[in-house]
Length: 201
Image (tube, rainbow, N blue to C red; front, side, top):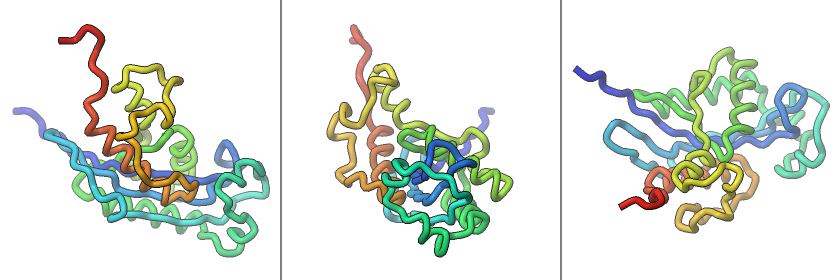
C-alpha cells in the first residue's frame, strides 16, 4: 500500500537587511504570506493577503552597508529603539508558520530564495534553536521558472518572464508587500505549464 504524501504549504517570505550576510549584518524586517497548498492531487492557491506576518527587528550590531540599508528605507536608529527583539520576533514567526501550515509541511519560497533563506534560517537557528521549515524546506522561484522555461538560471529575471506570470502589485522593498507580490508570482508559476520541449509532439 502506497504511503500517503503529506501536503506542503508554501509560504512566500521576503526579508530586508542592512548587508550581504547575517551575523555581521542585521535582518531588519521579515514579511511572509501563505501562497498556497499542494497535495498529491493539485496545487491550490491561497489569497496572499489572508494569512500574513510582518515584524521589524532591532539590529544585532553596529555594522551596516549604507547601500543595502537604502534599499529598504528603514531607519536603523528607530529600529534600535522600537524594533522587536529578534528572540521574540522569531519565536512569533515560528508559531505563525506552524499555525498556518497545520496538517502540512511548511515550505519557504522566495525570489530569489538564496538571500532571504540565508538570513531567515540563520536567525531562526540563532534565536529560537530550530526552524519550522527544517534545514532544507525552501523553494527558489527563479529555479522553478528556469526549469519550466527551459532557460539557464542566469538568464532569468522578472523582466524576461511572460507578463501573465507576474503580479500586478508593485515591488516596494517593504517586506510584507513583496512577500504578497511574490506569493502571487509563485502561484502563477505553479499553474504555468511551462515551455514545451523542442521537437515535442
